[in-house]
Length: 387
Image (cartoon, rainbow, N blue to C red; front, side):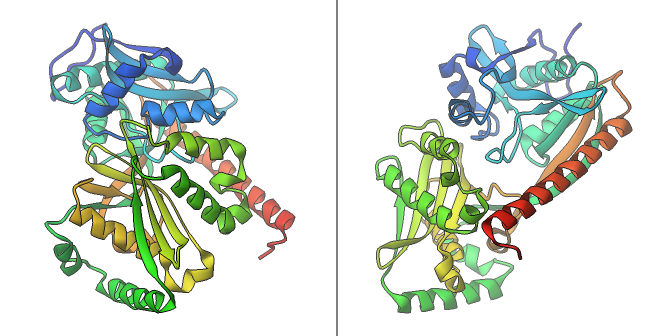
């Protein structure tokens, strides 16, 4: 069967195949990540191998890959999940550390044929049932092209939910950012808090890259996060040996093609806010933040974000800041731009009724949320935090 012909490009003889990510050529994987239309750390070798090495992903994790001889043109790690007694669907691989689930697709002339082959492979790999796709960047180039390619091939798509992720595209200058900001009251409040922080002691801001002490910056972050509410809830990176090692692997100084970056806000030498990011493809992905709750009244986390925005406009390390978050009031206030992240149900031609798939996903999510609330309540009982 020929791959579908897209209006965005020509037909292709390329084919997708399902294989273990462990079988991928590391150099080809890194090369695809670097030249993808929308480079993202989510499905980079850097991210996936950090998961696999520390037991956060199956050792035999599968992927859908499009290759032209040794050249890797498209990639989507995925797994199959059971939504009911007789319903199994495919789903992009996810974890609490992967917030957007767009496939990696090579930019340039290879894009259209690779995407066409990938869509054909999506239909074959789900066994005709469909795909449950949370975290699709619906407004970004790859997300738009993927949905168009599916529709061109006769897929039926249904949006289950969506949210607006805060992002910040670079302004001509930091002054332009400030003058055009829609929440000037919030900026005024933060300037007042910064004056109070300056009165409390010696304030300094440090940005650490691969040539600096990243290991020390990571230790400071882990300690800070572990002392906060995430530590009490058992969800801080330092709460488990596996997630501690994961962070050490992901933010290692030698990591490529996404370069690690840490930003630290200090008061009299002590770290009171920290941010960890991966930078590549023109975007800084702000993966983790933490602050000292003892200084919460001075909003150290928000003040550090303002310093990152200042450095973002003063330097050339990125053209966009991505909050990489589902919901964050602080970044929502500071970042005036948005990109839509959607959760969709996608059914190939001849597949099951889309309403059945959507209903099964919604029931599954309802049970999952209930289980999460029960687990959270049990944690509060165990730790003595009953309110």
